[in-house]
Image (tube, rainbow, N blue to C red; front, side, top):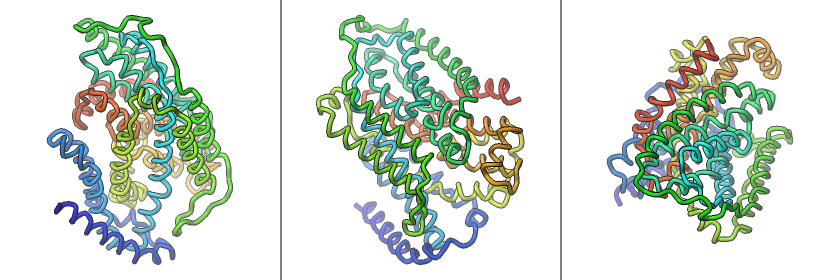
Length: 476
């Protein structure tokens, strides 16, 4: 009760500060905040990350019931002093990250989650090492074309069902996150948000196919490791696998593929259409983006209206995973504002020691990747994308600078792109589908590792050595 009163008081103070600062925000945003902000302004961001890491480990029941309040607490811890200190500038930055980034992000995830949740894949899949590896391969192959979220939501429930009889499933879901939720999205701007941002900033649509060989090598390494581990535990299983043909393979709710195609088409069209901009409280938003978001909501609504409830029940569909992502990322997005602003300030910000040390392709790969593991990988990609453009083509028009970067220093753009996409697999918050898959798996009874457990037991053990191989083969 006391906690609720405290949060309500903080929220009221924030609302009053926000309302008082709106006129300043509409008048303009003044100085470069990124050059003024100190590293300690990232404390709320560190706080929410530590909460995500530690509460599920030490107070799981409390976390399950109050994660939304914890997210709100850290968000308010940043918003209140930020608004008090910077007034209109703070209003602009908070409004911008929610209107331009968070809301479209959640709408896209919700639409994909809703539509994919209406497609039921059923049948007797044995959960053998070969079947599991093939399912991961299929998910990896389609992720670049239907998005990592779309591929993950289509396949995670059939993957869990095929392995329900298996005693150890944790590592299976982790490798699913590695491959389907992240690495598979490297080949087109439809696959992962950072690449779509690159497309919006004049990188040709099919340029990302340049990452085909690195993606194939990385996927092959991880699939081979998975097959060996899965074969080892498969031999130790005491239960009996379902017999082939016990339940006929069947696809239901296939009309949702129309809505899935509509989502993909809308996302692509929003990057191609130029319909002008509108100002929302002083924040400029492209009309094409607003039309895209409205269309995505329509696709999700039509899926809900036209899919039989029994199909969603058969899919064990629930709203909890998307709600968890929405609540937690609402706090993550606002608390990471100072960190992103400092990074964008480049050599003039408090993280100049990072920016100034990025010189070689391998530096771009590892620094972009490391930051993408814990920040939103889309703006992180943009920071180092602009760093590369500024380094090689200072003062040049963006379209011309991108053409010159691709013609003369293409390896740098490859390094940035691979780092942002591949290393989103390093943590649960590296990419939104990671969180949703973890939540769906836990709902299905799979014991998933904690935040630190995921990083220490899986990312450092399997991903980092694989990234070193990519570095030596493609970036040296």
